[in-house]
Length: 474
Image 1 (spheres, helix red, strand yellow):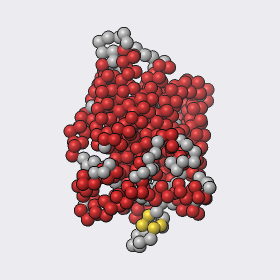
Image 2 (tube, rainbow, N blue to C red):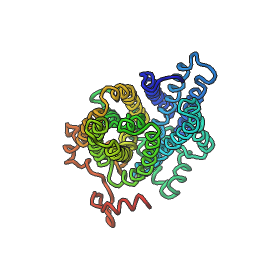
Image 3 (cartoon, helix red, strand yellow):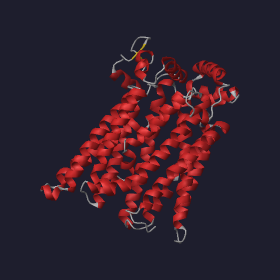
Image 4 (cartoon, rainbow, N blue to C red):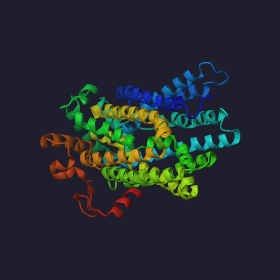
């Protein structure tokens, strides 16, 4: 559209999408509570598809007002994607067994990365064929990716509605077939009784956004956990890396075309490494993945500071550029995998596990809002930081990862394999203990992942890791 890559307008166009996500999260979380998870997902997809169509026609055969149309398209697409990000994790968690919520959502995010690969590959192929300045290099991927929402439109009616939503909206007769489809007839009866009992306990506990932000309210503590999860994810710095991957490769010393192909390779690696996320998330727990991810990202960005500095000063130091560019790119691949395994799915999963049904959709909406605002800031500031800090930007991310890891270790309870009600008990216990530090609540019980020990009925973390991994692969 005639915008220079170094123009601040690029950052604005990229980042305004996240503002749309924040608004979409609030609206569609309410919509899904009122009309059902399935209808919510359908409407979100339709909105996102409309946004993509608006972007596709921006500047198509005209120039006056093209930027405005692009902004509108980005915002509308953001509305839909923000809704998807708030409704789909809730729907997934409410359909999954307690020991399989993490695996289900992590597999969904792996498919999200598959879509990212497809979009980038189409863009790269068209760019190579037609040239980077050709407008179809970005228009073709936008319209080609509509195959996914339209495929979902075709099958969404066959999907079950959330049984928990049906029970909480006084539709138990409709919940029974959904439970039987998910768990079988025998287990469905027990699940139905559990849902009815949970509904009795939570039915009168309506929660507003103001309640969630009010210190002292029962839902304030889980809301802070949710907010900090998304803030810390943004602080890992990978949002900037994912958007500006080719520029990072160029900073390390690669040419423009090489950088584009290396970024494609990084995304392919990202997709395959996400397999470890769904294998491990219910086997070792959320806390270990997040803290381990921060540690790996911090070390990786520290090394990239070194390699970036050597690459940019290779002539003065008489060092072959490739001698530092190649290991620098390897480290970037490792950082991408660390983020995918540790931080991608987990922060979206946790809000779906720690709120009661009456606040679960609002909790995930808060998560999307903070994600949108945090990434708006990161993507808006990243071009400026790259232009001014160069490779020192990686050192900033090294420090922010240290903060994210430490905060997570101190304050985040382990929510994996526990029921929704057991996770909510942590916040009651924390209130009784007078502290939010996980190690000080019930002797640190919530630092550990409850896992059935092989061959026994007690709950412990002593089950061998290989046995846990085997359980996830079965």
